Image (cartoon, helix red, strand yellow):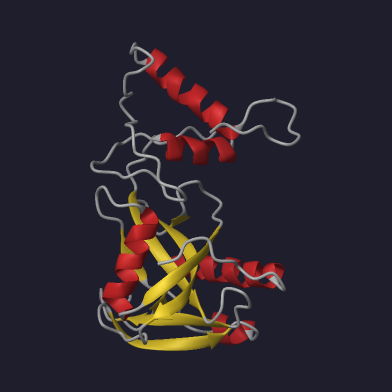
Length: 232
C-alpha cells in the first residue's frame, strides 16, 4: 500500500518513489515494466522483514535515493548483495527495559572472548524475523516476543563488514531459560540504567555503535517502552 507522507512537499510516498526507481531501472536496462531488472527480483510481502535473498547481486541502491525510499525499494524487492544478519536485543521487559542480555563469543579467534547480540544469518527464502526466532532458539534455547526494530542509519541495517549488515530487534523472553548452546560460552544480564556497565564490556567492534544506539533508544522510549509488534 502506498501512503502519503506528512509534509515534505513532494507529494510522493516512499513506496511511490521506490516503485518509480525500480521502474527506472527497467527502462535503463531496456526491459518492459513488468520485467525484473538485473539488481532486483520480486519477493513476497513479509511484514516488517526485508526481501528473501537467494543469490547475491553486485549492485547497490544509489546514495541519491532518500532513506525512506531506499527502505521501500528493499521491501519491494531490490537487493544489495549483502549477507543478511539478524540480532536480538533481549531485554527483561519490552514495556520497561532495564536489563540487556549479552553473549560472549567463542569463535572465530579474533572475536573469542568478546560480547555481542545473539543472532545469525538469514537463510535463503527466510523472513528476517523468522530467522531471529530460529537463531535465538538455536543459540539460547528460548522463545521470544519481538518488539520494535532498532533503527539503523542504512536501509540495509547496521554494517558488520563490507559483506554483511545486521538488523536488530528488541526481544523479551517468552519461554525457556537462556543458555549458551552455540557459539557462546557465557551469557550476562547488563543493567541498562548503568550505561558504563554496558559500554565497558568488550563488545565486538561492529556491535559497539549498536549498543550506543540501543542505550539512546531505551532512554528515549521511557515510559512507553519498546512495545511488542510480533509474538510467537
